[in-house]
Every structure is written in structure tokens, then in C-alpha cells.
Length: 286
Image 1 (cartoon, rainbow, N blue to C red):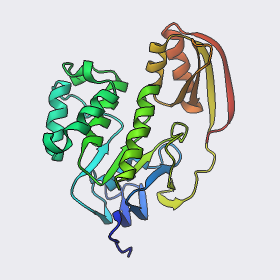
Image 2 (cartoon, rainbow, N blue to C red):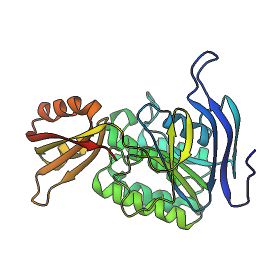
Image 3 (spheres, rainbow, N blue to C red):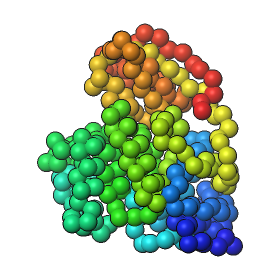
């Protein structure tokens, strides 16, 4: 069994997970060690169980077998969506979740305020969670997770739905956490981590975790369109969108999406009035 060292933030030993006694195994005999001061990216094909792996690592879901050991009780965990149906205003939710995580105004208040400002949430504090766009709700989830006084931060698709300014702020925030000795584990397609640097790449395939970069998966589709910045932010929040890149001339965007969701993304572009210039398929996604 893997032994936990002093500088290890978390250790997974022979972890297996399935949802029901006769259900297939989502995770199989996963062994992994997560060290202090490391940025770890988990990759793998769609539906392979990456979100399940992160939930088990964070303690949001219990392993069916095996063991997960963590240094400290607090984990900064951001799922890919807020819990549905919460009848709370954004500010009340932030305060409530901060209290649960043990955030103290005298000790951690500055970081909480920086997160709210950095993600542009000041104007949303009076809004109910159900009124927020998907992208804004994701920023709220990230703010809650990253404010936690934790050594382990587990983020599911953290760049999904973020505008360019928020993406840059997230990179700066994760880099600062690494300098402070925290471990950050996240899933992402890898296209929006420029400037951050990744210490360890892990790949989940057939329920098993291995070291190394992910093998090429399904091809990706690039939709070239003319639209405004608001439309670009809306597209970033759509399922399957991996990147929205603005051309130097302005007003023109390359929307990179996986082939599986390209039809839905293209329909959203046309429905919202964007002018589609071209659609092309590129090689395997990285």
C-alpha cells in the first residue's frame, strides 16, 4: 500500500468506485500521490470518470473500496456546476460556504475579496443563484473553493465558461496557491493553461489512472463567426466548447468545440444571430 509522506497532500490507495452493487466499475484500483506545491492535470476521454475521480479525491463521494488519505480536513472543491435549486442570494451563499469551510474574515478575508473582484462578481452579490448565467455561477463555485483555507484544491473543468480576463486571473490564483505549498488537481482539455505550467499529467482510461499525456481523442471542430463579446462569453459556457479565440481585428472569433457537440454549438450561434463565416474540422484534439 502507498505510504503517505510528510509533504504529500493526498494519497489514493487501491481506490475503486461504482454506483451500485451490480453497476460497472468507474474507477479501478487507482493509486496516486498528490504532493505539496504541485499542479496536477487529469485528462481522459469524455465519460471516462474524471469527475468521479475528483469527487472521490475531494471527499464529496465515498470510494466503494480502497482508501483516500488527506492532509487536513478542509478541501477546496469546485464541481462543474452549483447545486440546483438553492433559494439563496449570491452573497448569502458565499458567506454560508465560507463559514462551512472555516474561512475567517481576519485571516482569509482578503483572499475572498480578491476572488470576488478578480472574477468580476461584485455586481452579482444581490442576485439569486438561479438567476445567474452558467458562466457566472461557475465563477461563484470557483470563488468558494479557492477561498478555503486548504492544502488541496480540486477543480472540475475550472476554465469552462470563463471569459479571458477570468481565465488569466485563475492562472495567477493557482500559481499563487502552488507557491504557498498547496496542491491543485484539475481536469481540462489543456488548451487554456498557458502560463500556468503543469507539474504532473495523469490520464484516466478504462477506470485506471496512469502517468503521461492523454492520447489523441475525437477530432475537434472550429466554427469561425462574427459576433460581439457578449455572444463570445455565452458560447464559452456551452457544453463541448474548448476555447473561444478572438481575432486581432476584433469582432471575429474561432469557436473550438469537440465534434460530439459541434451541431448544438453551431445551432446556438445561428439562433443568437451570429454570422457564421466557416466551419472546419481539425485533427485530433490535444
